[in-house]
Length: 139
Ligand SMILES: [Zn+2]
Image (cartoon, rainbow, N blue to C red):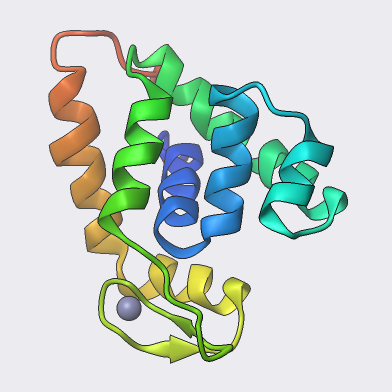
């Protein structure tokens, strides 16, 4: 079965667990910044920024199709979950567990905090679009 919210879930996980990833997508789509400007601002390579934008783009488009404002949603989620990586470790903003890389943190959120991501979809996104069309279910 195809999860029709899989692109949006990826974007939500990015906003929870990967500040550089979230801000790359946000600056690109919401502030019309170029990948090289974002790369300088976030201190990550242009190649990495492009990767985030490419993967985040599908979630942004799905949110637009649903009739929501992706910029406001990304901003809200990012401000709910601040990532602290001051000691070189990446701390989960939900349970406080520390992992060694952004990738591990994304995986941890995907596996252990599925319910948080589902709740954001149900209580933030679906509530907002109640009555509006949702992406068509593949059957
Ligand atoms: Zn956690």
